[in-house]
Structure formats: structure tokens, C-alpha cells
Image (tube, rainbow, N blue to C red; front, side):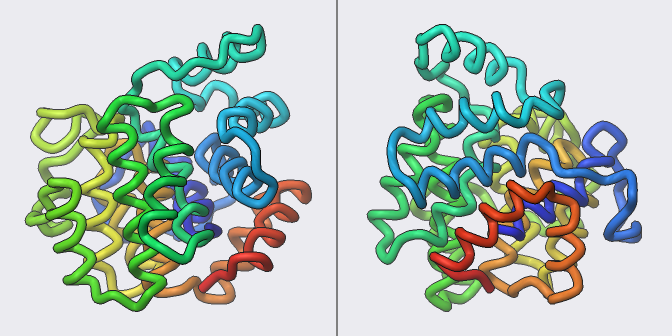
Length: 269
């Protein structure tokens, strides 16, 4: 799950200042973890301790309000309603369901368990079919990568099972992609407008760092695309020791402890 957090951190300064190159400092003192990391860690806590996933997302958004301005508007409204006792999903297809799903891909021993848990993670807020699909696609990528399934086979499964078009390369995506999505057709803040591109950035890479550089270089919702790509890339390539150490150092002690507890229980690569 740390791969997701590192992707979020690296992308944090480029979310609203997109770059279209892979040539940038991998870590920078301006970078920070965002809501993507906080809710990813909330997912890990839920998987380790049980209960309703939504309760964990509410708790973490409340306990870690910074950077509250970076949470999606609809999610912030959900937080406020949930605090008043109205914890209902809001039919979102936003990519928040996919960016926080990484731990699910590590926690189970079958595809069915993985897909079922991904659905439960998503639907407490993102109960739109595309919101659920995005979360399930990312979780399945991670699960399959952990089983040693080849990149080409993973690509085929995602295209067949979820209907995502993964035919474009990163080089083809980069000049055509933005916050408005590919060619401005589907918003890059949605699952359908960002999950396929994030998956491609992971599958096409040569190693973990290259995957994150791919993700940042296409632009759009950079921290979330980096988070999704990083979650998959960790399972595919592992995280180099120096990058792992630097990434962990961005987290406060309480969040770092949860990451370490999760990795101790479910493993890392």
C-alpha cells in the first residue's frame, strides 16, 4: 500500500500545476501526503479491524482534516452529513474510490474476495457503477500482480472484465490528456476518465519509479493518478529501499504506524 502513498506524495505539487515530462525531482520538500494517502490508510485500518468501511473514512477525514481543502467537494459534504448521522452514499463516479483501494489488493487470497471488498470500500460513498468498477479494476490489478500474472495478461483481464480501453501508450496519452480527461471527453476526476490511464502508466513501466514518472507526466489529477498507479506498481515491481524510506518519512507517526502494521500483516513488495 505504500506505493499508493508515494505516488500521492510525488504528485501532490503537480495536481494543479501539471507537467508533461518525466524529468522532474522525484522527491521535493514542497511535496506532502494528501487526502489520497489518508483515505488509503483508512482502508488499511478497516481491513485490519473490521466494521463498516464508511465509518473509517469518516473517522480519518475527521481526525486528519488537513488538507481538508484537498478532499473532494462531494466527499466533504458526505463527511458533514455523516457527522449528523446521515451516512448515505452519493452516487459518485469520482476517482476517490479507486485512489483509496490499494490495501484491498493485498489483503485477500481470491479474486472474489478482492472484488467483493473493493465493492464494499467503494459503495459507502461512490455507489455509482463506474465508481465501483474503478475500485474493483485497480484492486484486481494489484491482486493479479501479486500472483505473478504477466503485464499482458493483466491488461487483457482489465480490458475484458471491465471494458477499459488500454490500447494507448503513455506517449500517446500524454499530449491528449488533462483534467478534462482524454481529448476533453470524460472528466479526469472520474474513474472512467482516469483509472484506465493510471493503469497504463503502471503496466507500461520498467520499474516502480518509472511508473510514478509516467503517471505524473500525463497531467490531470496528478496526485490521484500517481496514487492509483503507485498502488499497482508496488505489486508489479516492488519499491526500492531508498524510495520506501523517503516516502515513509513524509507521514506522521500515527499514519506510519498503521502502514507498518498493515505491511506486517499482509506483506509488501
